[in-house]
Length: 271
Image (cartoon, rainbow, N blue to C red):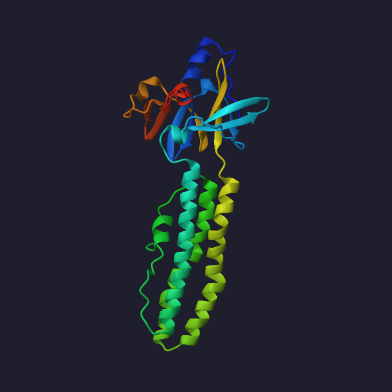
């Protein structure tokens, strides 16, 4: 996608100055003036630069040019996409082990005629508390995670059913149901748990916003681009932060846009 602002009349140029590219960074809406944007790309592999600024990701090759990329999340002192994804992956690995342990405890309770004391409510186990409140920036990731819902709920619901079999002195039926859980729900959940990291690596692609300057071409990373909108300067307020990369905040109806300063966010001299 390219955004062209050359050869505009004064009237059209003024209109273009009020148009903003709306992007999403860490679930928050930001805006960049389109008059400064050269093009929008899916970020390719980035080559790190030794001894660069902490917020500089590295360089990419864009046709015949070498373009430096600034990590906007780091610039705004937020967790990077890589850090956020790694935390989710590690958490899911832990939740996988917790559910396997849950099944072991249920099995032992049945075999030894002991009460089962672990969480039966799928929304109240550690995974459930996270799962039913978590929202990822990627619709693809959200779609993948939605596949946990059915197996996870059914997994927990069977604890009461299996315990009722034991109360009726039907351990054979209880063991049969446990075996079914292992072959269905546990199999499906483990497949989802184990496949998540590979899935994340394949779909979680950031977007690069490329700016053309007189002396250089430089880019920034964002989670995704959502739209182009017009923001009248009368709606822009001073920011309530000392972050130099933020110009202001626009409030239009129920929409809030944090307006970024492209010059400062790409200035390697500003820490």
